[in-house]
Length: 304
Image 1: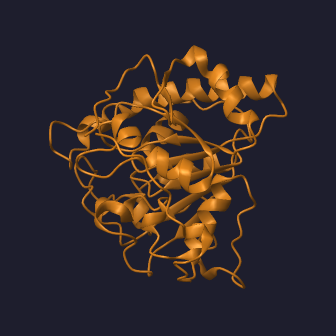
Image 2: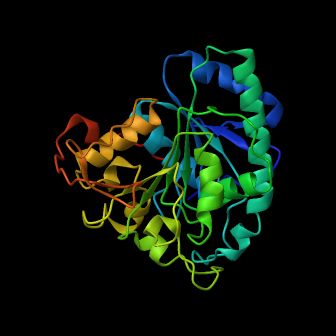
Image 3: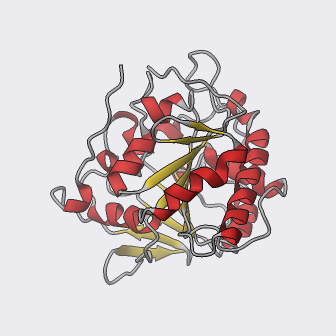
């Protein structure tokens, strides 16, 4: 059961559950970028955070920070926004939605601090940005409300994992992002969490992470994980970056590894892509090799 609660004074957390203020950003970035490991800035989705991603949760295994850090051999710095649902209503989107504008404003401050850090330390490794589920709406608000810095290449890659943002109209803000950063979006039509994510949704819209017939952002790349069957068990299919959710699919694992560790991302019909649709949608080819080293499950911490 997660015991940590949202604190607006400390929007940043490291995997040791230590909280950091905005004025400490440079102090935390220095060791995270200088030890040789890639860095991932993680923007979580809906839930009672930061406890869910750091200590685990009651409605889901959680522990996303440790799945990322231990699964990919990276350091993780988590951005925390006020994402808790109302009471025990796990389907509530309206309360966390009401906090996404504030989250976008603070995320903009973090990005401005990252930009200043990179100016002061031009040799520092660029982090990857992993944005999960409703975290995509925080990113959307940062872009729409002009909180995103006027800079290119803050990140080695930006990965929107199963975004809960509305598909209608998403191309405008996503293409603004993709013209600044190498941007990827995953979708999976088998995602059972997003299929139930209807509360507070405008008529005619659905979560982008389920796939869409709406206009697409021409500078982004959409990675279609569908037609492989549901990935993982229970709600694992929503946390597709977790290796336990990959159902032994090596191409899925290699894609996430490349995107999160600063490597070139291979999307090649001769190697790992079954089809390219609408010019920017890449449907990964199924390649089940559950014993491959890439798919080794990390040992996750246990908390009382």
